[in-house]
Structures are given as structure tokens and as C-alpha cells.
Image (cartoon, rainbow, N blue to C red; front, side, top):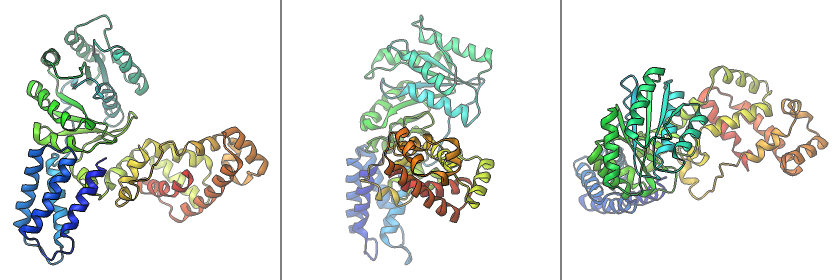
Amino acid sequence: MFENLSERLERSFKILKGEGRITEINVAETLKDVRRALLEADVNYKVAKTFTDTVKQKALGMNVLTAVKPGQLMVKLVHDELAELMGGQAQEINLEGRPAVILMSGLQGSGKTTMSGKLAWRLKNKLHRKPLLVACDVYRPAAIEQLRVLGEQIEVPVYSEPDSKDPVQIAQNAVREARAKAYDVVIVDTAGRLAVDEEMMQEIAAIKAGISPSETLFVVDAMTGQDAVNTAAAFNERLDFDGVVLTKLDGDTRGGAALSIRTVVTKPIKFVGTGEKMEALDVFHPERMADRILGMGDIVSLVERAQEQYDEAEARKLQKKIQKNKFDFEDFLTQIRQIKKMGNIKDLASMIPGVGKALKDVDIDDNAFKSVEAIIQSMTPYERHNPQVLNHSRRLRIAKGSGTDINEVNRLVKQFDQMRKMMKMMTGGGAKGMMARMSAMQGLKK
């Protein structure tokens, strides 16, 4: 995410490196390169020009303190302006009303249905709401079934009328159903088409008029770049939506949509999809995203993700076990599963300042823990709790049971023993402790 833009901006700032002061000439040269980097990231031309003009005006109007180098000042100015460009502050969705009604809009293939499921998961598990999903895509084959499967996966009910072809009536009936059964949020998944057309616009506008949603969200694929911005503008003209949800921001995206869309449609980005799992939906924080674009990491988001998987009582028990050198393979398996729930491993690593750049060309497989899990699961409960009993014959049996070889089992046992000693030295509970354990586990994936 934003890797190419980050590299280009870093090269741009080098123009000012070693300069004693900011001048109109060196600022103009730096910002010309910054603008080129933004355009290559598929940022709207007018947005890129306004952005660099604003930074230039601020840079030339500032007196550089002797303790601050011109390059450092430029990084700060670009950072602050990037955050402002993307909205300045994070904004949550409006959940007023009983029930609150959320209308999902967007083109076919943008990820509306999956995003509806992710949003329902978030509302249920993080905000402790009682959501109802509504299937209003009456055209796409298997659309209702897809939403039903997602609903079962996250244990959220789905309202549908398979024999009806009237999405407005379906949505209205769903809201009545929610009131009758005390669901406090209704998420309406609507139909999309491959391109903007009048028929689709009339239908989504009719649904909005029929249910008066408290929040209308526009879902768009971040990988489509400027096309995403143009589509957002077309939808906003007819729907006047409340916010944008960017999907596939974890993919090979240049970032133009995230950087342009707020300025073009004057509506905030509220959420971003960061993976395939249902929990891979984050509130969009402009300042944190600016940090990541400039290679500063995003340690706050990393700690928040760790905190979500952290159980205080369990952490205290684990801390005592580590201190007594009683940490076993069962505990290790639990820790692996907690870390996997936090999201994509490379994405997590990129949140640590300096690590993202170091891992730029490193291929980190999300299935890296699979062989480790297979080996541990091939152990008996007694062996997991007592690693010291793993003699040669037991290891041979475990290797056969896990589809690995004896060398892999030997390596895991040896690394596990080394990791236990290291974890004992840096024992800590909470999110910080989990991050330390995550670091200690890195060698076990190889």
C-alpha cells in the first residue's frame, strides 16, 4: 500500500538534504518532484497542483529554526497537508435512529456485499450493536446467497425476499422487520452495475427515498485509481452520500483514490478494507495514513489491533507462566492464532516505523505459520504441555503426522526453546507484551 509513492516522496525530500535554508528555488525543485510523485500515484491533477502550491506557500512563509533542517520541515509540511487532504480527522458512521439504517451503494465488483458483512461484524463485535443485513440486489445471480453465507459466518441474520424484484419494498419491509424484532442497525446491500447508468441511479435513489437512511456509504475499489474518484463524483451528484468506504487498500494500489476522493467529492473516507477476513475493516485515520505514506509507520493502529485480541486475565496467567519458564506449545499455538487475527503479517510489520521500508522487497506469506501449526497439532496434549519429553521417536511420529520432516520438527523445538528464554527476559502483558511476543516468533516462521 502506497509503496511507490512513499519511495518517490523520499527521493523528493533528498533534494533538500544538506541545504542550509529553504529558498524559492530548492522548494520549487522539491515540490515539482513531489507533484510528479503524486501524479504517478494516480492523484487527480488539480488536487496534486493545489497540494504542492499550498505546501510551497507555507514553506516560504516559515522561518526555519536552527534545530530543524529544511528537509525535516518539508517532511512535516507534506505530512500535515497529506492528512488534511484526506480529511484531517477520522469520522465514524452516524447510527442515529431506531433502527439506524445504513445504505450501501457502489458499482458491481466494488466489494459492497463483502463490505456489508464486514460492517455488520464491526457493529456487532466492537460496538455491541444488533445488526440486520438486507439483500436488495435482485439482479446478480447468487447475490442473496452470498450475503446469506456471510451472515452465517459472522452470525448476523439476513433479511431477503427471493421471489421479489422490488428492492424498495424489500428494504422497507426489512426496516419494519428490524423494528418488530429489536434490531438496532439495518445494513442494506444494493445492486450495482459494471458502469454508471441512469436505471441504477434511479433505483438507488428510490431506495434511499423509501427508507431515509441515517447513513449512505459509497463503496469503491481503491485499485481503480482515478476511475474510483470519477464514479464517486457521479454517485454523489445523485445520492449525496455521507461517506466513502475504500476496499482493497491492502492490494497493489497506487493510492490516488485515497488522496483525491476527499477533495473531489468533499465527503470523508470513513472506512478502509485491509484484507479478506471479516474483521479486516478499519476506521480511516488521515494522520495515521499520512504517517505510513511517509514511512513513519503506524504504531497506534498496531497497538489497537493487538489490544482487540488481548484478554487481560489471560495475559496475566501467561505472564506468570513465562516468568516461571512454563510457556508451552499450547500457549504458543494460542499466541499464533491471536496474531493471525490481527491481520496481514506484512501489513502489520509495515506499521512499525522503519520496518515497512526494510520489508519492501520481502515476500511474507500469510500462511507462514501453517507448518508450525501442523507440527504442534500433531503433538499429543501431554507433549504440548511438556516439550522436554519430545525425544527422537516422538519427533519422528510428529513429523509423519504433520506432513513435515524430522529436521523441521527439530528446528521448531530448538527455536521454541530459544524463544522461551528470550520471552522470559522481556516479559510483559497487554498489547505491548503481545507485540514483544510477535517479534520473538518471527524466527519460527522461517
